[in-house]
Image 1 (cartoon, rainbow over the protein chains, first blue to last red):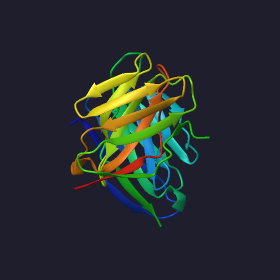
Image 2 (image 1 turned 45 degrees about the horizontal axis):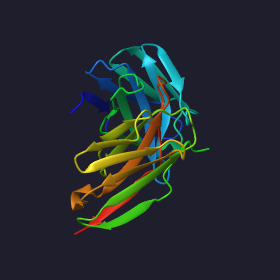
Image 3 (image 1 turned 90 degrees about the horizontal axis):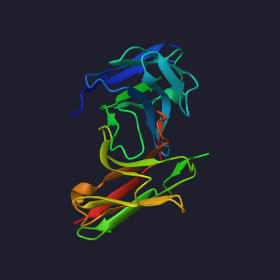
Image 4 (image 1 turned 120 degrees about the horizontal axis):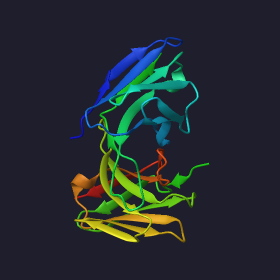
Length: 116
Length: 112
């Protein structure tokens, strides 16, 4: 299994509180991603990083921020959690995609976040 | 708008028969495609991928076909086994871009 650890694995928080989810990798992969999975929506990209301090928005980035100060860590922050952010969050890592390059993204086990 | 579409939310197949899962995409710049399998309460796991320079890739029971002109790919599982019952996601990326875009998934049920 790829070395990806998400923490915490489960969290319940109150509306309006800040929340930070952590993704830690031991594979030294360049790219890191945060996705959320919701019924009827599949996996939606929140933010991704293509290097230390290099990040970009995905399709559902509103209400989320990220930071990557080290290759191995990618943090996802909900500045003020809302009930609509109740979801399962997955971190993934990969090497750069490229034409003909056989690569894949490895996923963590997920973090179940409930905002009450 | 969805760039990667899996129009069948579910599929039921008899054990031993072929399962065919379909995926359509709209972005002609996508050039690398992947299929993932997901069990409940676990992270997605990689199954098979294909580059746009190919039209077919096989790995054991799994074959992915790519039709670039139709912007369509499919995953064939032969023979299907009960352990294949899971949600299957199609995903696509564009060149060296970092973002990997997923479809909504298809839930496959393989009945003994």
